[in-house]
Length: 442
Image (cartoon, rainbow, N blue to C red; front, top):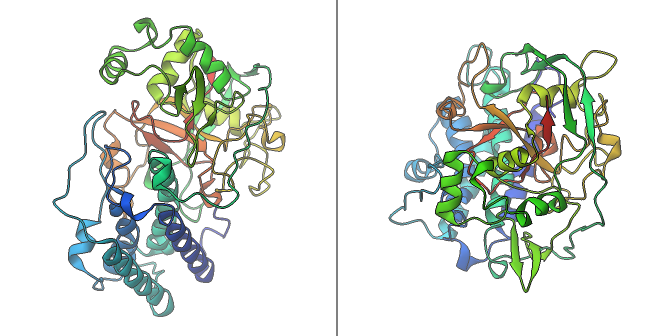
């Protein structure tokens, strides 16, 4: 989470983050072998090559061209790599006629990096009279955008065959043992603050503004995310075969794709396995299950429950029995490895409840880290919404009633992004992100 005062911009700190982002991006693309460079691990997304060009192109388009009004590196490549796609469920994205060679993309990225580095050195990147540069807006836009894409890259690479990737030395998932006994926590009625005030954070995306208070009725919530062990009872109990648990649209999607289990699972020789980033492992019973919103909703109905709303998540995560609200579920202390599985410290989930110091004041675990939390809330603007000048299409294109809010963080979420007002979102039948859920009852 950005901790500098809202009125100040620490340029050396930003430059350091920029360099760390670019170094991590190069390392992430280094996981993919040359023969998979043009592959589309997810048909709903561009091929790998697009993303290696997109990140540096976005940096130049945002800071250098839109922010400073200067020319970029290569206008054709900057246009080609400008924006990703978000097609409807089950539809393939468009195919480009041709993509540049990997060497050309790497050279383009290096030239973009030099141009942005030069902007740090000699340009006025913080000007009160320019809406794109005010309070370093363009800078924070590229920093958070690249950090977000690190997670996108990993869940995309998850879909590549193991032979197409170079596993890191010493990789070994922490499988754990049996999960803790499921239990629920009663949360009394109270108030939750959603969003942020523009003068209280150094940076926030347009969908985070403005802060407003919501009254939340009492509810009961699972203390832990639904585990693979719990979800297995749904799978083996016929949950994917009974339309009573699914909405009509979700059931048609399940039928069309022939889904019988989560996309992170596979079954071989009579045993369930979890599809790891670099190798499959026997299904870890204590890991949170990663599923689409459609599957999470079906499971919750099967249990006679439902998914939490965005406001209920906030109440369970940041509220306290003594009143008031916290910056993090665990309090005001900056996020660290003691508090949760985030910050790209692990390639995989960890057993639920592995970070008791990160529990909320009510005793709800893993609300930040180990998997994004699906909510029942449709992604929509808050009162006072205005598009971000540095990236005006960031949120507005997705206020279409077809995306759901996710809260929290996953193992691949950068620690710098862990602010209370952060909102993520995806289509309900998109099964690829590191997203889990928990059930609630009114």
